[in-house]
Image (cartoon, rainbow, N blue to C red; front, side):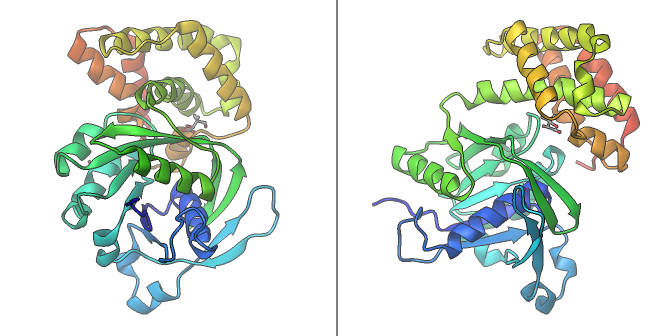
Length: 327
Ligand code: PAF
């Protein structure tokens, strides 16, 4: 029998959380084509601040969503997650900042059923070890990397600013082929394109390299992403990437400097007018994900006895600019 993935919980009310909530919830209202079942799909959102709302306010909650290239925001009902939803969840997608992942899993771990697929959707690396510790060893944990652009302009109000794609892949546990195909089909139906990759760790490293360059440089210099391509940063970019390659080798990951530089420059160009998430966090006085980006490289480098002075310096510089996460 094909496992039906009909109960979905999105954790996090940020831009990515609402983007996935919106598309999956809309899928649940449209004849359930991707689920292929007569049973109803239920999609709920677990927000960090929902306990401050009365039961009645939770019942009448809404959010605003502006679809890609549309001018007008529309209002939609928001269904908040209750404990029974976590217990029944077939998929939980954690759309949180990396430094909030461990705590969020800790809070719901007791209610998660062992068959539930846990999807980590965040920038940076280094959360898996913390998540594994808090869940049964057989729990299936996946990573999701997405390039969709999304802007949260007010609490519970987002605009889908850039069409992107998402890559998913297995990090821990065993995933049968039918479940893998069902999961990919369902996510792809809600918000295409979604591709499943056997080598998601390699993709995570590519994304990490992009974030290790664009995020700290834009945050420290208070510049838009496109400015990273200016000649004055060329040497620094190559140093950061060379250090990442040296560390990745110790983790049996094979990266090539020239390819990395091309990808970083392409992303900086494609998002030229964007404010990186880290720059946005620094400007708003929030904690940054630097511990899971250049800080992750620094920790791995220490473990493998590899020198990464530039990544360490960027990590320290951004730490000095930002407030410290509680985790
Ligand atoms: O963190 C971000 O802002 C994004 O991951 C990226 C790719 C740097 C583009 O802005």
